[in-house]
Each structure stands twice: as structure tokens, then as C-alpha cells.
Length: 120
Image 1: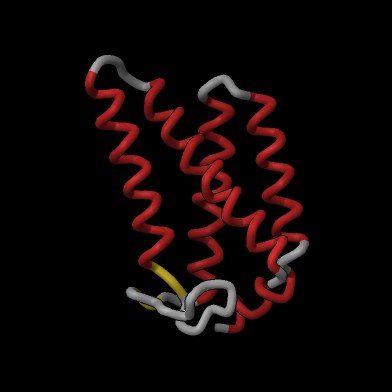
Image 2: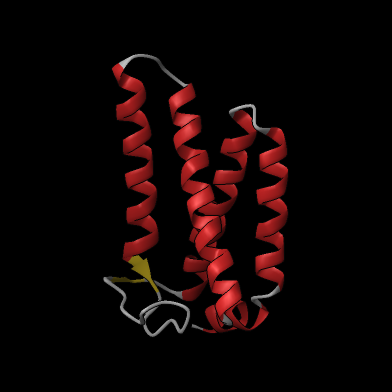
């Protein structure tokens, strides 16, 4: 995966986390807003960082908890698209459309990696 697509994926990860935090924030009020937003973001970060395919060339190659490639692909899509839906349900419709379009662009540019993941 080329450097620009890796940078795009990183920005999409951040956008998904921000969307999830915004959504969680909108669900409650007071101190619970902070708690829920933090918990949702930490869960997403742990899922993204811990469950990986061994020797994934788009990552460090480390896999704290090794999983099959297809499951990793489903996890990535779930988190990125979950962020898109979170933006949408938080009322940021245009942000959701933009981030969603960029997710599609990212995966169109990642066909080799998708094939690699499915074969693992």
C-alpha cells in the first residue's frame, strides 16, 4: 500500500474515532458524556490495534491477537463505516457523506491488500 493511501487510512481512522465520540457524546448529558465518549473511543482503538493479521504489510506486522484476514477486513469496514454512521446519526450529514466517500476511495485503492487479506 502506498504512503498516500496509508495516510488516508490513518485520517479515516481518526475521522471514525471522532464520529464515534461525537455520537456517544450526543447520547447523554453531564459527566456521562465524557465517560461514554471516552469508553466508545477506547473500545474502537483497542479493537483496531489489537486484532490483526500476522505480517500485514500495511501495519507493523505485529499481531497481538492474530485473526484471519477476512475477519480483519470486516473489523476495519465495521469501524470505518460505523464512524460514518455515527457522524450521520449525530446530525453531521455532510461529514458522513464525505468520510463515506473517502472510505470507498481508500478501499478502491486497496484492492491488492483486500485480496491479500481474503487469502490469509
